[in-house]
Amino acid sequence: MQVNPFRDALRVHFILPLALLMACSQPNREGKVSEKVAGKVQIVRNGDGYRLLRDGQPYFIKGGGGHEHYDVLKDCGGNSIRTWDTKHAKEVLDEAQRLGLTVTLGLEVGKERLGFDYNDEKAVAAQREKLKKEVLRYKDHPALLMWGIGNEVGLRITNPKVWTAVNDVARMIHEVDPDHPVTTMISMDDRDVAGVKKYCPDLDLLAVNAFGTLEYLEGFMEKNGWEGPYILSEWGPWGYWQGLERTNWDASVEYTSTEKAGMYRTAYQSSVQKDTANCLGAYAFYWGYKQERTATWHSLFTEDGHRTEGVDVLEYLWKGSVAGNRAPRVTRLTLEGKIAGEDILLDAAAVVRAKVAATDPEGDSLVLRWAVYPDPGVADLKIGGDVEAKLVAIKGLSEVVSGNELTFKTPAKQGAYRLFVYIQDGQKHAATANIPFYVL
Image (tube, rainbow, N blue to C red):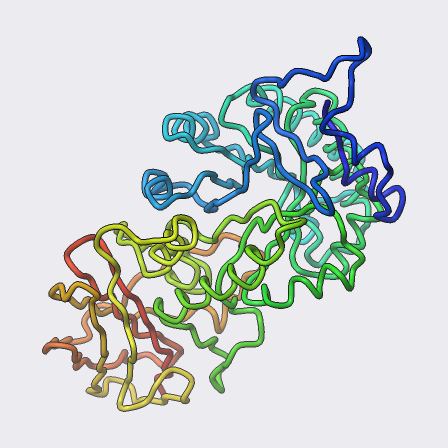
């Protein structure tokens, strides 16, 4: 029997009815316990919490959000993929099925901050019909786990009809596909939880994008009266929007790949593993390579496919050990003797020196690749994961590499830049670090 404890919980302010406690063994009209249905995904009560069932068996999500390296995800002990839309959905689902993975399939909806008008009833109805066709196209795929309606649609909204539209899509999905749960992905914002609780009774669970603040997740749920099931639809180290250290010219200071790896470990252990009642799993962000403020901020892989230390940590968290070769570690990067966070002001076309300290767990020989990029985070701010243009490295800087040091000539044009170093071990693993500087 398909149950929806989330919807029922909403109706009674999260005081759950007795019927939900009996959901796992509810008899059918003939008085017999219902047989398991192949391909069916359910959320059921489990003592004081909830459990996700797939084909009748407990299923805890150990996932990555992204569009590549699914074979590595499988080898690392992961079991699920999250997407943000249905682009290439057939290929993603088929590849997931081949590897024995599942997919939380995203359904892209219009964002008010990007111009979608939720007062336009025709546009809203057309969007719902478009999504219905997508649901009908993929609902019977054996790799499908659940549906995700939009991503952070509540970000900077002024019209609560956004949430009404989300709920209408959820209701439509339940009508045509009763076998897969439905959620929407929100930011860790009190207003988003309030919107979902007030306007979206047809969702089955909450999906939260949480970065860095995972240690506060329990308090966030409690403060907002959330006692229902949830997943982390994106999680990882601190984001550039979260009040991190900044330079005087407003450039965010990015952590090294080694520092981020430690944050993945701490965040998972302090939240996902801690909440054994209501958390149904989590999708690490970003399983692949993505330009977002920088090319390395959220990327667990480099552009050429080298895995970073964060992947090693996820493998340990999912499997309890790390098999095979591990990624290098970077401990310090300096430019003219200063570290990231110190205001590094350099003259145009000046010869300067950078130095990095790095080690490798297996003692592999390390190869260093350096690059200087313009820093768009100062002048071209994006939010909510909106698409950012791929950056092009500055050429002609007269670089000279000697061991772990780089001597180069700064750009001739005034502005904000970042120096990146990629440390590779020859085994398809890498460490990354960068340091912002300003050319006068």
